[in-house]
Image (tube, rainbow, N blue to C red; front, side, top):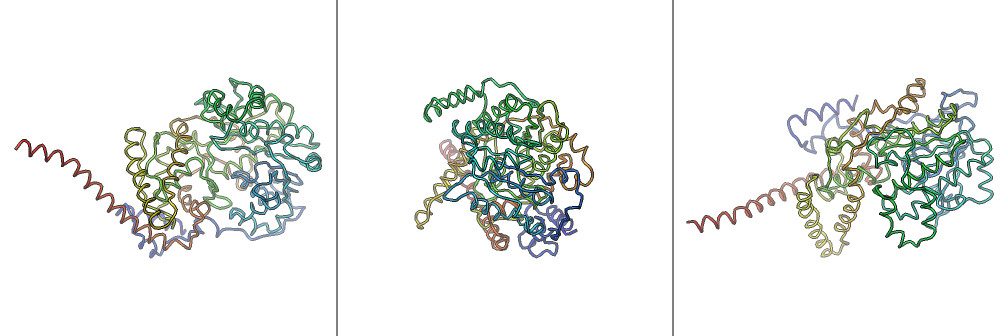
Length: 548
């Protein structure tokens, strides 16, 4: 009810003015509680689950199951872990394969994972979750997954279900590192799973862009132009610099080492995974949560998220790309629910061939880049961050000459000026460095902003139709029901709270700062227009004087 009133109020104000005065929002009796919008007021009360209580078909599939998750410290891995612990009450145990990092052992890293606000709902609803989760030291980039003998034996004797999500997702990763983790990692996992005594299913999390050299991608394996064994042999005989110099010739038509190695990983599965109860799961561009455990949660700036954050903080003002193309984005909780249900189906049906499930949205609920950004602008204006450096102003273009001009006046010149002022005031200059990083990100994303892909996702749609009503409620992944308007309502607020780490208590001051930045923006824009008019008038006036 509060959300409907808030929406009607916003719509009424938008009819009269494109910019709603901040004071009107703050003083409105329909002003919405941010935590209510994010869903942090809607947690269920904790309750004891009896062992005799029968769950839904999907919940029963995980009864007494021991699950191994690789990539559990990553974005999707965290959501998967949270969902299994919260929604599968009879699950026996979850092992997270974690490597030591930054002077922290795996147990310390496990504790750090659960400090994330993502797990706030789990801790409230299932307060005794902690005895069902533990870490196992390992590394998917090493031989044998970096497992000790005792850890390997534990997994072989206990595990039933494996979710292999470990991967390096950096587009510009060195070819050796990408091959070791993304290709050798799945080979090692297949080798381990062949020894597991009671394996029900092995899920390999790939990407819909593993075949991005094709604009129409079906749920099937495609032949690759190179053999993964040849590439593995090559990286074992060359030094890092030589491989770096050879990378473009190695990856061929692929835009980066990430998509190239994920494609080779699927070749590994087709050639070495036969006979195992396994499947390939291909999500498209995974973005923030749609509904659960809270709305708008995310912990990285990959893909369109980086653009939204840059624009919302007043750092990014222009971008080079075709924003009229459809972007295939999918919320992470939709992805995880589909992954969980797919694992149950594969284990139950036991198909003769290794099936591929694609989780995408563009065929059912397509949205263009510019539409997505505009929706986020409309709703995000009400949740400015105290860390904003300038007011919202964004002019994307696919004209290289116009982009060069906009980049000069909107990024480079202001960057030099503000960094100089920072040095004069004794602060560290950071803006130009940020723009250098943004330009690097722009180059890596250019391929995906320009193109438009069609991903066939028939298996996911058919799977949804087989679920009963309770599983549909618990594990919603019907992409046909996605509303990008609903998603955008909480997206920027979620980025503010969960990613930028800007507490909601700063909202009043952030809104005051936002109004000051808006005033400054108008002044600068007015002065710029006057200056440009003067530049035009100067030669014209000289011509008039010469003629007269």
